[in-house]
Every structure is written in C-alpha cells, then in structure tokens.
Amino acid sequence: MSAPTADRKATGVFSPGRAQISARTLRTDNWLKSPIVTDLGFAAFLIYATVRAFMQDYYYVPQYHYLTPFYSPCVSKGCIPEASHFWPQFLPDWPILPYAAVSLPFLLLFRLTCYYYRGAYYRSVWQSPTACAVAEPHAKYTGETRFPLIIQNTHRYFFYIAGIISVINTYDAIVAMWGEDGFRIGVGNVILWINVILLWTYTLSCHSCRHVAGGRLKHFSKHPVRYWMWTQISRLNTRHKQYAWITLGTLMLTDFYIMLVAMGMKDLPIIP
Image (cartoon, rainbow, N blue to C red; front, side, top):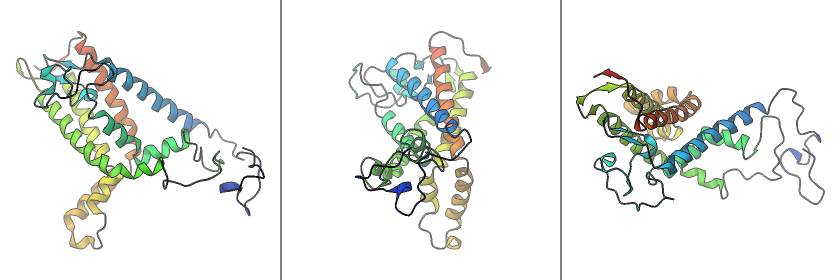
C-alpha cells in the first residue's frame, strides 16, 4: 500500500514520526491465507443459510418431530401447525419473509457482533487491519466509536436473546425424543442434541456471559458462587473461537440431515 497523498492528513501507520515504508508489509509468509479462509468459511455458511431460510420447505418431520434450528421458533402462518408447538403463528405468510424471521435476525446479530467474529471479519472484510504488521487501507481509524461500528456495543443484549433461543432449541430436542410411536432415539436425535449442547457451549463461552457472571465484582471472596461461575465460563471462553466455527458446522449439519429426512430419507433408530 502506497503512502497517502500530500493533501490528506497522514494517520495510522503513516503518521508523522513513523517509519516511512512504501511497501504494504515486509512480511514474507503467506499472511493472506487466514483472511481468505475466513471469507470462504463465512461465505459458505451465509449462502447455505440464506438458501435454506427462503426455501421454506423440508424443515419439519412430523413422524419424528424433528424441527431444524433454522426454522425455530416457526411463528409464520405458513408453518406446519405441529412445527410451532405452543408458539403463536402471527407472521404473515409472505414468500420474501422467512418462517423464522423473528429469531434469525437476532441470531445473526449475536454472531455478527461477537468479539471473535468481529476480529475475523475486521481482518478479512473490513481490512482493519488485514493481518499483523500489514498496513490497513483506511486513512483514519475511529474504532467502534462511530456508526456503523458503534452498533457492536449492542452485543450484550443479543446475548440474552440468544440464550432464550437456545432454550427453545433445547425444548425442540426434548420434544423430538417422542415420535408417533412414543419414546425413541434416532440418529436425528443425536445430531439435534450435539448441536444444542455445542450451541449452549458457544453461548455460555461468550465474553458477555463472562461479564454477567463476574463483571463489576470488587471482591471475589464475598461472592463465591459468582466467582465459581466466572472461572468456569473463563475456561470455556479460551476456546470461544473454536466453538464459533464448530457451531456453524453443526447448524448446517443438523439442518441438512433434517432436510434429507423430510424429503423421504429414513432416519436410523438407535432406541426404537
């Protein structure tokens, strides 16, 4: 990246007093690999999730009570009644409106404002910076103090909503253990529970959850229960990045399996 023109005030790595290096970076390793892989991973999930959200079919298996997390809670008037359980169906049945239009925006915003995802797309999309020791293309840096990045501060509120949706997903997994013939466990149940457990792990390892448990405490010794919760969440938090990626995979796997069963593939019973 070349130095800024003379009529623009130099900032960031081109500030007065900084070494004047015309090259974008002096790194010799393949520093573009990480942002490219991140972009491809995000793109794969977004394309799949968008297609499935607007497909509005093959989301529920009445025989086994399997409901994909992409459509939960299914509150559209176009949903199969059994797929909504006790959730009211109040959204109009419009082709351009996903059946889970109430939950999907909040889940997307929860991940979009997640501290790990911020770091990932700041580097791969926003280019701030692309990689360590690589000059960013922005002449001025304001952080998260101005629109649109100031919206990132709403993450803690999306965390609460994500927790509620995780409870709903857990309810869906419990209901799916009772099919038309009574209690049963099939491959779909195992996949649903693995997905739910990992979603809870990702949600609870969130930095906001860690702050809720132990933030603003001046004396841990006076709050032993909250201190214990804080230490457990802190252990999960060290692997928040891995859980963020793993849950993207389990969400797609769970949805894809339920779609196949809804299309006619037989679910293999484990405990008939």
